[in-house]
Amino acid sequence: MVIESYNSKWPQQFILIKQMLERNLREYISIEHVGSTSIPGMKAKPIIDIDVVVQDKAQFLLVKEDLEKIGYVYKGDLGISGREAFDEDNVSIKIAHHLYVCKKDNPELLRHIAFRNRLRETPALVQEYNSIKEEILLKVGTDNRAAYVDMKEKEYKWFFEKVLQGN
Image (cartoon, rainbow, N blue to C red):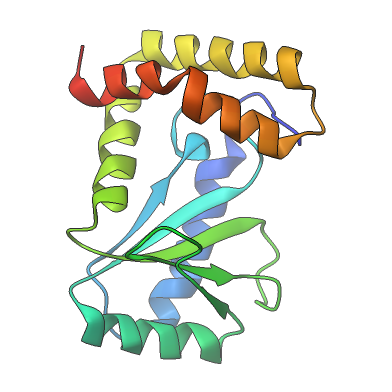
């Protein structure tokens, strides 16, 4: 698992993917750049996380159909209700990314947006999160993604709560 220093190319990569999606999707509310690559100064895995926001199930079905036409493969919710995942391996644009489609009131989507926005506004939190990521990698190593995610979710849950509560 590679964690890189912030790369100014990540926003441009998101824009390229977003433009491709905009050309091919008939209906959606918004296309959001979320995750660590969306936060200036944040260390991250060099994979762009994208949430396509839809109104309801009917709009999701249109988006799903449009995504499948351009090579995305529907993977289901992968254990997170209301966040539908798509595999990008067969898509013509060769930028590593994770694509999810979420209804506008989905708690996971709302958490992604709130977390991103708070970190974008608070550079001190970005530095704190970068330190946490480094600390976890020192403990679990760079080749154990499952342990990294597990430790981040369990031992550093307090940080995410702090960010989301605005403390």
